[in-house]
Amino acid sequence: MNAVVRDKSAPQLVAFKDIQQPSANDSQLLIKVEASSINRGELSLLNNRHDGWMPGQDFAGTVVASSSNKNDIEIGTRVVGLAQGGAWSEYLTVASTDATTLPEAVSFQEAAALPMAGLTAYRTIRKAGSLLGKSVLITAGGGGVGTYQTQIAALAGASVTSVIRDKELREKMRARLPGHEIISAIDKTSQQFDIIFESIGGEMLTDAIKKLKENGKIIMFGNTSEKKSSIDLFDFMPGHENGQLITYMSYADTAPIDKDLATLLDYVTAGSLQCLDLIEFPVKDIHEALAGLSDGSLKGKIILNTK
Image (tube, rainbow, N blue to C red; front, side, top):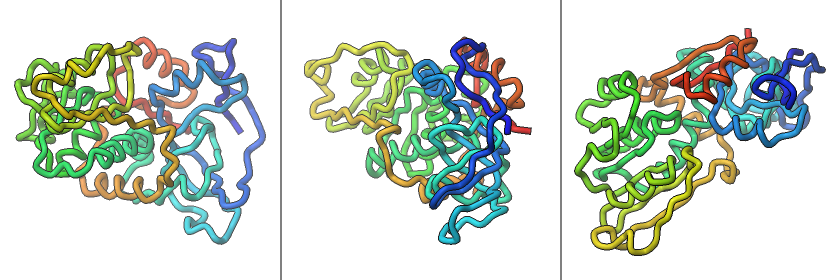
């Protein structure tokens, strides 16, 4: 089969290689991949993994083989899921709990955008507790996770303020969520918030603390700026006393994903959750896609079509 592998001598650290198609072991599914996506964190993985490693986490495709009749997902079923690697290739194997059935109403492309970003959004919101009636700030509302967080927080009954720098995406979100505050920068709001979702780091974390109510929570789940923040107890005084900083690392969350992913698909099927900025590439153009993500020239969620 045609596979994408890590190769330090190749452009963007990836090359195509013809390798043997994998087979499903105990409690695994063999998936024919129709679409996958690129997450920003995978750029770091490519820099740190060994040659021959097969990248790719988010996938959508069709089950072509199953190792056990104990699996609930039958051959021929459309599925979406999250792999430890290999999703940018033609076929991959995953545990049955790392995939869930994909409704016919949801395209492979829209589904492939969902797993990593959608699960991170859903699980960080769950970590914050009930959002009903709460004021919520999302500091990176234009990112893959933030786009989903903004919509899920609104569904959960929060009054949402989402910072989205890109004008086109900002207008799309305003159209989807009338009555919520969609802004271009954190200093455009005068509100204080019960809960803040923060993934930029650096000065943004310091600015977020200034927007926190007493007894509020900041859920930290990323540092896309790759800059350190200098904070201490006095940053919470006055006005932000007893504020909590809570961390979430998706790689350390080992809970099965199938049920949470099925819940997200219910939202998508109902029209309540949508990726607003899909950009599609054939997988043969992966070097162009990775370059655009790396240098910032591509704005949106990159989907790789296997065909």
